[in-house]
Image 1 (cartoon, one colour):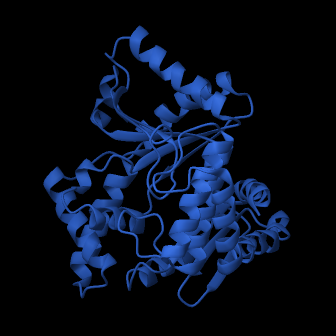
Image 2: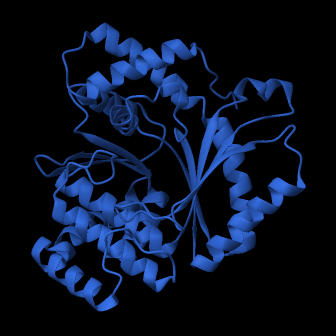
Length: 341
């Protein structure tokens, strides 16, 4: 398989990132300039694929050794998410972004999370760095939760290879997230509410309803108490007070109804999954519309034409969210959703 390699300088990548931010703000952009920028960004995004695969395979092996039930997944960051991160971090350059390629291990318990972290720490001490990915940075949001309630353990690796034909990928950064099922349920619920309400709950600059933000901070602490971990700053240290405030906000915000909406969408798609190899989802959160297009095969001209048509629409503004699921991947998503709702 021929892996995508970088075709542009870091300066070109950073300038394309600035265009991406203007696209997010829905500023008037010349069509040619936007197309050129998207070409550069998509190439920069795609050339993380090989380093991501290598680092993910190591994660999979170690996660399974710590917890046979561990779930491991990988993804390349979507263009709107990249634009939002650049907007919210003005000093950041696209060429410096550390999580364009990311993989995640969801462990059964917090104890399993600690086992996996220990395996990485042991490997760093035992093995030399030459010819293999180097651990660059780490962030422990379990010991020190974010104010919004987010808890997870992050490792940033810089890819490095001993093989000459793979040295072109040296220096590419890949992020690993290690979290428990409880922590993952929290993160999935946040993403669900953000998707279906349009509130910015995940970005650094929060523009969502303060009550939703408060609810998730409280839930972060409730789950931390269950796992005997550090609680979220500015939330009640007393369990009874915490539960009282959570219940009041849950009723006011109709939390169960919002989370069940995603479950309903999953169930309607799952019923047709047997007849399709993949689904393209187009979500318009402002107008609360979800359009699904099934495909009988993963490689067909109709699928390609549809995706390019939606990409052209997306250039009008990033409010449209596009997701492409393989049928078997969607079934996994459905199982995960039922455990949350």
